[in-house]
Length: 492
Image (cartoon, rainbow, N blue to C red; front, top):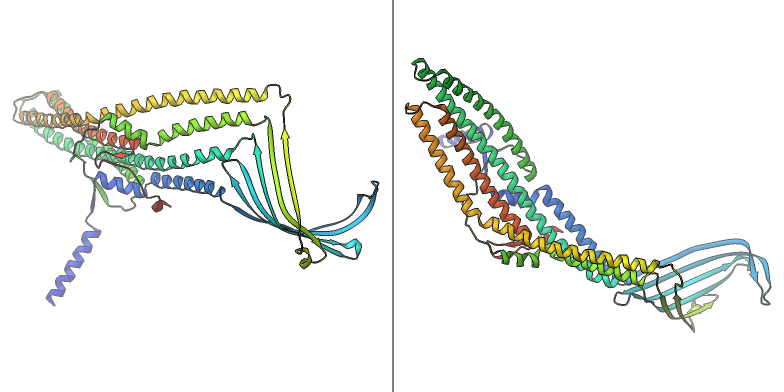
């Protein structure tokens, strides 16, 4: 009985603790990044965009597969008076009344290398002639094999075969870069909230300090040890500290809402961020980073794609609206009969070969103008790509150099924070024991201490943001020494 009673009290106390006592959820930077990668709006949008690119590429690949199609007309009925040519060449009008039924099945295969297409077709046609006591006849085409080959025409399939796989590979890298952009955005939201929490701690500490100093100053003023302006200045600082606390609370709520909204955290538990100060510093070789970037980044594929598309447009301008020809050849079997069994007996062969030619004689320089325009655009693209490559290389170099100096910057900022805090503590202690009477020295020490603390965390934010920016540009994890990859099956 006693054991059961103790268990009951433990359960009641646990429920009271969970429902009444506020809980705090501690989150590290890496935990925030993992959560954002999994469920942030930007991460979800990146997945949807990759899925669209994936299905676009799958659609392109399926265009090269054989296409099976069936088409039919059931029926084509007509009753009218039409012009008819007699055997002697004269013409007359006769009344016609018939129904025509047609069914065809075909398989077509596109040949991307040549731009031609081969097809196999089979069909059956029925004709009901109502003007002749409903006479019925059939026409069969058991098999037709044909080939159509454009000559001297622009072949989009040959260019798409080069460009579309490049675009799909680029979409994979864009997805990885989008994920790294999620990391960068998470770093910004994380440190925005962390700075807000620090601002609140500073505001609360300053208000408590100025409350104590103001109470001490009132006693000293009554003893005539300090001037009235010092007392008023301390009272003003205390009032400012109260205002700063209220502003810090409001800013903290705003930053907390933005942080939880981006990570899609729906619970109401208060959050405490753990500063990522435990860092294993690394040094990145700029040339190594540039090499990884040109191998892994989407921009390197974008350069190739833009050059290919410009060359394709020049090729199109040279071939379209110029000398043109098309060869078509068809071989098959056919037969007609009054009933279906007979229509497939002893089929007759049929052949068709045609060569169509189109030669523009006078176009007033239209084709030449299009070619020149396409060539000029190609030169513009080449120049733009060359400049983009230079800028890309320089941007990576500067990012890496900036990242490599962050270790020293952090050490300086940490030391400055320690020195400024110690200076304030010493100044405050000297003021409390009456060694110094100037409130301005205390104010300056407090301001320097606050700024040094905030500067340290700003430098810490710069370090992590720079690291993830380099990861995004190079798609390479410099801590693990491995290329960034993903399993697209998990996304689809």
